[in-house]
Image 1: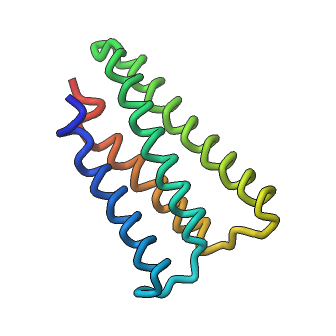
Image 2: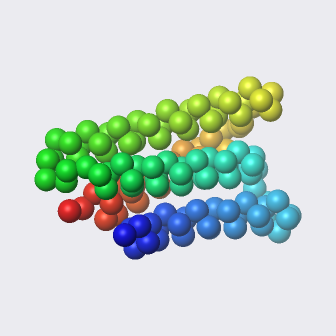
Amino acid sequence: MFQKKSQPILLIFIAVNLFGFLVQKGLLHANLKINFLLVVNGMLLLMYFFNLIRISKLDKTNPNAMVRSVLIGTLLKMVVFVGVAMAYTTQVKQSVGMPTLLASMGLYLLYTWLEVKGEVYKK
């Protein structure tokens, strides 16, 4: 059940982790805090699977419930994303930086778009 629906998300997760590995090994140069980006990537993957399990238990014939569920999932991901950013800045005592935050928000939008566009919410 999860395998076909999760392929695009898993490919994005692997690609971002591969990018992070190449940057950490010095093969690519990026002005990003890779550790933060990898934590956000993992958090978004876990939130995707959490939403997938939550949606699979939902009555898909009720359109109001589907809309509420999509909105709650998106809001929940945003709250967790902001919490991770705040926890990182308080623990590391350094600013994350605008390029890293923009890259993380891009990942957030990509994961959300793939989740909504994909077969997760189809009957």
